[in-house]
Image (cartoon, rainbow over all chains, first blue to last red; front, side, top):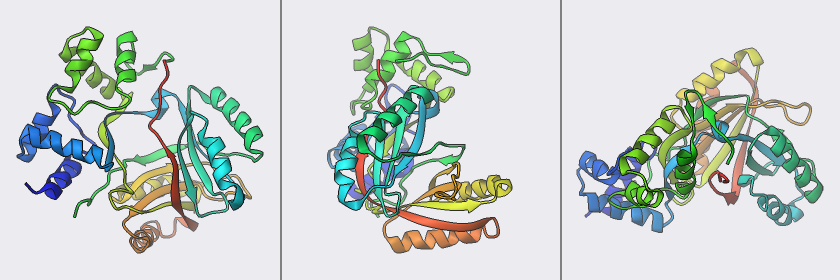
Length: 151
Length: 167
């Protein structure tokens, strides 16, 4: 069987709209003309190889709690140390090193705005740098789908 | 876990248990919800119905596959930031939304003088050349609506975990 084609089909068609049914893999197989086993083996392989990290519900952050993007201007020599201190906060989900004066960009998620205020204050003390906050004013689009993989 | 009440649905204890148990995702088995149902002492179809209800009110934004886009070959990942007149922001945001390659697009506040951009759009590609081409398309798309733009590539993922809900 063409593994690459299977991977491509699974990701092209069911990346953002995975069925909520008792037998999701069978449904996917029927739609894409694969057996249920082939579909499951395909997803297992994608997970094992790290191409995907999980299959399941994604929670709307603003329904689940409160969240915002934040950034720090950190001297390049301190990046590893500061990133480690930031990542130690369990409220930090994502943290990226970026090519800008503001070079550490991360997302904080917590119960509510007050809870995150406390986290930011504590973080600023720990890293000795101001944390810039970029709360969302309005979302226009949230749809991370990787299209065109395995081609 | 705090009490969640979103339009038309208040999550009960069973919903919360389901949500907490699905944080790492479903198992890749013939009947992924059956094991969960047995564990919680409810019927399999009840789990499915509850998940559908949570999705219908937006508590579950989507049921999806979380991809590692770096691993899939999308190694050029940039945050494009734009300085847009407040009265033109809506128009610019909606135009970006229509571009298939923009994955996330948000309005965020400016704080002068250090930060003079109010529209953020994430763009991913297999090379910087590909991303730069996409940015040119974006510039044309919102021509006349923005004053300046900057492109901030990510060079390293320092942390990436899903949202963790606590009991």
